[in-house]
Amino acid sequence: WTLDARDGNARAGTFTTPHGKLSTPVFAPVGTQATVKSLTPAQVEELGAQMVLANTYHLFLRPGEELVAGLGGLHNFMRWNKPILTDSGGFQVFSLTQTRKIDEDGVSFKSHIDGSIKRLSPETSIQVQEKLGADIIMAFDECAVPTDYDYSRLAMRRTHAWARRCLEAKTRGDQALFGIVQGGVFSDLRAESAREISAMGFPGHAIGGLSVGESKADMYRTIAEVNSILPEDKPRYLMGVGTPEDLIEGVRRGVDIFDCVLPTRLARHNSAMTMRGRLNLMNASFARDERPIDSGCGCYTCQQFSRAYLRHLVNAKEMLAATLLSIHNLYTLVHLAETMRAAILESNFEQFARVTLAQLQSKE
Image 1 (tube, one colour):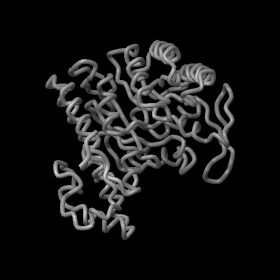
Image 2 (tube, one colour):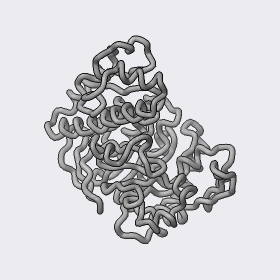
Image 3 (cartoon, one colour):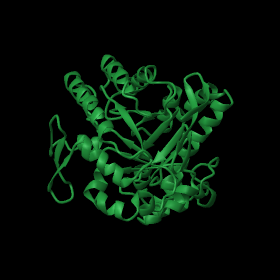
Image 4 (cartoon, rainbow, N blue to C red):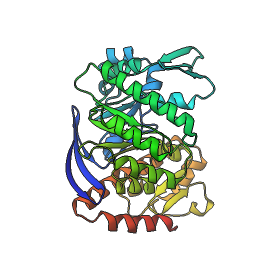
């Protein structure tokens, strides 16, 4: 990773991977099951995405990492020839509160597919990710409820022990393994975790355990505190955060990489993201509205279709509604990241952030 420019705490950089360079800040669409929901890889590329995510937990359960490896790895399997990041499975295991059992060695859990008992440890998480073959892989961590101090401390220390084991288990030289900072919303724990994870020598760092129920104020404060400690010369990835305002506030505090399921999830629930808030396409007021979702947007959906047509697709429960709304929502965030990079390179980021955040507060 090289730093191309900075403006305050906002950074523009370039991260080189075996499948191409990432220009940061960057937003990466989530392709949980080796697919970005409702879109073809060509459509994802056309809207400007530089990288996609895939999910270790889900691919471990189905179709299995051996099958993916036998078919040439994730890039070949899903026909995506740009960078891929895989998460470690830690967050998904965290969400299985009723069916998991955590110990110092790893996690046992019940498969949501067939009810069978499965096991993930730092070593198996790395083994699975190496077989999947992503460019950026994540250390296996424990994501705890962010407001429980005692458990956050326990989970953080387990995360540190597991991070060391992930480093020891890694065998491939062509994958960048990122360490994950945990510690809930507690300043002392986050500082301890940022120092400890930094000292392990990862080529990049992630901030985990946020956007899971804590307040916005706590999230923004935590990002700033962690990034004040993480090394300046390595990329920083804020996991699972994806509203326009959170991207701006994250970059403002030194974040380089973002991902989130939100844009495609909103699309499947008839919602369009805009830089002036969200539109619910079920709304009867759009029935004869000839305007695009956003007249300033360059995406395929806004260039071709009216709100009236999109509302018709939503009401008729047509699959194309999710596709067109996903294209728009992902384009909005991918393009926002590109625009922020340009503002940083022009030393104009803070003004851009102020104007855009004020615009997001206003409604149509």
